Image (cartoon, rainbow, N blue to C red; front, top):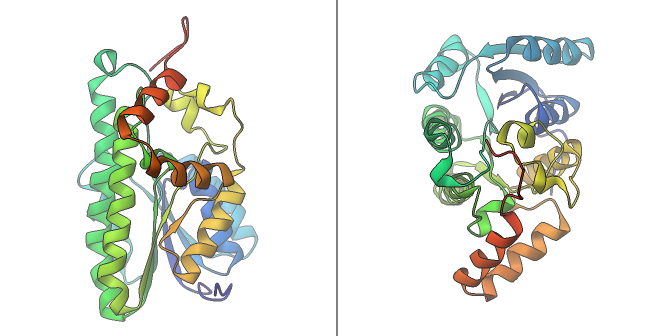
Length: 268
């Protein structure tokens, strides 16, 4: 059962904390008494959020880092655990996507998705989880997506990286449970954030988006009770259930028709 006091006084590191789900996760953890380490690329956004949380009594630290840089996870670790802060909660939230036909896409953005969505998650987890094992306590949240349950053309790389995230979280959860560490894969659907604008994927918002605050609350509740996968929307849960009963080729063909860029649409 989730206990709202589990995180009181503990240091939580939130990646991608400058906006969207990341900022909402930071606010949710602060409301539960956690101390926050906020990291992302944009200092002004982080400073603003730190000031907001600080005004409510939350102790915060800011670490500016770009997870596209393979050295960034080590820099974040050195500024936190390396500086004597015991990070009990690792929130692997940072991520990015790209919408459009793969043959015409910007290759660097495709590779950036792999670096940030996958490589950085592994690097950060490998740095912080061993310390959690030593302390025999810890929580790791990996933000995956409902896109992890089936291939989705036109966000092909993004969906594939989120499969990685979900499976990584599930495997890690089984490994470290014996040390008292809980790992959760949070699999939101379309959520209020800047993600769609950055990815050029506003077409995916047409069926509605879930408030980031609701996603954060449900995700942190699941993490506290040790639930290994949480899909915070009913539609997402239904989809994840139904895709198990249809051939993947059929699902992908249907997804291609739904996701196909419309004539005159912008794809980044």
